[in-house]
Image 1 (tube, rainbow, N blue to C red):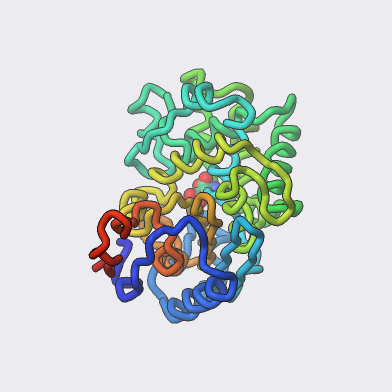
Image 2: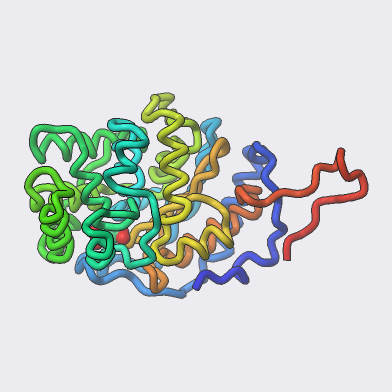
Length: 344
Ligand code: GLU
């Protein structure tokens, strides 16, 4: 369970529309890292065999501002596989390609309330995938990527996610091989989608592209740049390249806000107030529209599959940097006697 005690003593700064100055952000990022560096809660994922071998002590944090300011702490440049976080960016590429309405019809926008790899979620909806951040819908979304062959579709995914990151991303071949050997469940989901006529193409090939996309190697720094691109109306704040449109950012973030942290998405939004996506290798990226993005990497996960330390550190950053989208204080001009109060 997401424990608000982790940052309850931090004053809830309200959203001002801008981040504090670079020095102050730098200081807060360092504080967030050192504050949770002794945290040992959670367990490393082991259902993909190679993930169980990772050093559980790794802990990196990064914040990228839409103005281009960069802040890294700890193991922010340590590579790990992007896993489920890829779903958010492939979803954005799909909306960019086909538009809001078409993608909504094909893959839906609602939370299933069921686990990320649920087969029931598909069966209960007559094969119509509902939540773009669970595997069934993510596999259907990957199938939408342009390309005459699976190889071309994979290239489109890799290039698209690289544009978000502002550098060429590459496949972690060891993670890919480990998952490809053990992903019977995802292959079953692919077949089920095909049986409901919800998937164009060969289901095994589509699942293979999806497995590769999950095995792309990133760092916390990369994830923060990728998230900051969605915070910056679709323009990568480091390279200046337009990756997707402003509308795509809005659509993607609204879906991720209610679905990004598996079955804990409601807890996350309630406590932290930011759209975010996590992955089972220990990454989380949270996006503050118009301001920037914060990303954490630490391999120990809670029971739902979310990095414990990354959640804590991003919770701290959300409060201390005034990122919570739902935090406000009375406008003083209307209420001269009121002053912003500390949240409990
Ligand atoms: N590649 C993983 C799977 O499909 C992603 C899991 C995750 O990060 O949630 O099982």
